[in-house]
Length: 525
Image (cartoon, rainbow, N blue to C red; front, side, top):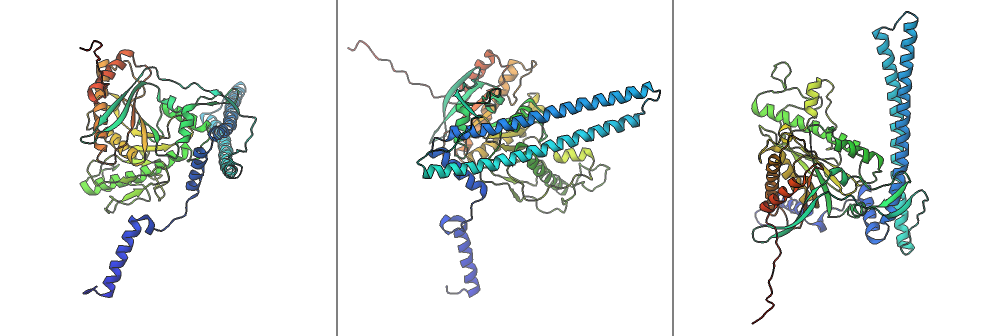
């Protein structure tokens, strides 16, 4: 090129080569598939190109039965050991009192501490055995799938499998909602997109629990469970939104049931629930370090100081050097992934965390902080969202855990509340990763108390309807048009009067597609 030095020509050519490599697949470097990606392709090939889905679910069930038996043995042994320890303590105290030398508080505390350590050791031993069983089952399942894949390609689709411990029953009856109604809507300005809206009275737990007869070891062919397994690696995913507190390991009836379901059903595709929650907790600590550091450096004030000093108290391993914290922390994986944008704002914005894999750095240490500061760095802010992925639930592949606050529980919030910002982020994430079917608690809670009147419930539902409608209309500017299904869940205790009132509110909020009625004149002139 005239007027350019050889160095400038080399620099320009390198720039163009990098641009082509980053934007065109045929020029990019081919990276080898990871073990997880290879397993995903193998699983998808089997379930889509063979009638093996019943067999696969039957194998998973047989492993789950073995896991349940081990967990029942653990719970029984821990319970028996606890009762034995309490009897021993009572015998020791009674014997000492009879001998005229009652135990001191220090001696009693020492005995309790000793028995507690023994119980901890027992539980730790059992957890190690269960972890070993999980790893063994996962490896055996993947080896068996490899064998099935070879059989399908070499034996004309014949599957090698026999297991007398798993009995195949008739198709199980799915749990149905108490009340439900479906609508078809069209959203958009010029090019309208059809979507499906459902309003139903249903417990969110029913979307997670499969119909299994544990007493007889019978595997029930649950159609919802089969559909979930068939679409596990597809672009037709389902997810449930749950509004939670400000803790990752929050306490609620739903989380207790979810943990129980996940612990008793084998997870062969993703990390187990405890590992995912621990990953999220580590990411939240790192994110809060950036949030609080940004607030301190941006505002010149310190809300976290314990003694009024000007230095921000941060966990070990974090920095407070004022560097730019708006970098992207990548949490991408083969299935789900998202970037966390730590914006330097006076009010930290909600973030979307994915329970896939660690962000790359170890979690900062909190051991030198007071319990109060540790809780602050581990807490979610209203509007934060973290995601757990599942292959062992009945009707959903992922659960969005959306952080709320007291205003959500008190039904005292507006459309500007951070929880709605988090819900908007969920819609963006769902669009990016092909989550087509989304279940949303209409009242942003899975329970309804007696003090929540009909007027309060209708007001809350109308607010959620309008916000979701706005998110769906805005979504048409983010991606190509694609039909989606939004299912609004009402708590089990909802009355028929509330359901029909909210049905009318939904019809007033969304442009419902009404059938065309044509009158035919039976007496033509």
